[in-house]
Length: 80
Image (cartoon, rainbow, N blue to C red; front, side, top):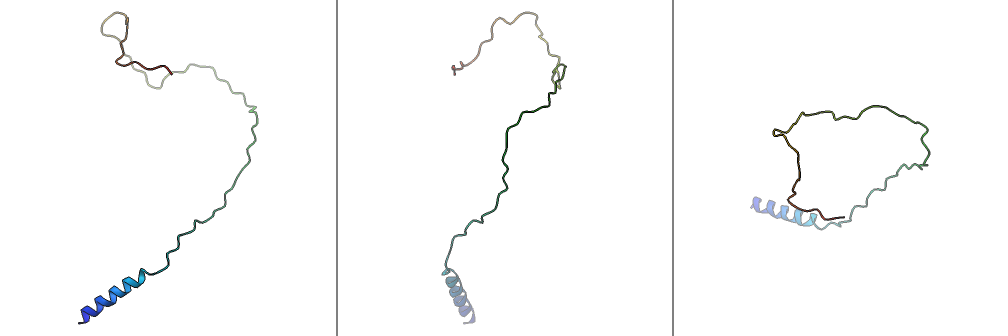
């Protein structure tokens, strides 16, 4: 009998908890810091003299002497 009463009270409690008013959450409005940007010329004129080379180089050569006459592609690339 006591178990049945507890189950009844649990059922009533669960049913009553679903009867509340569900209001959607309003998103919080947060302030944003802004900055106006003005384009200005750069006075710094840096120039460097040198040679651009890759970081890693591999010595790869052909095993058979000769020239490549044509290289056939499997599919054509459309213009544009």
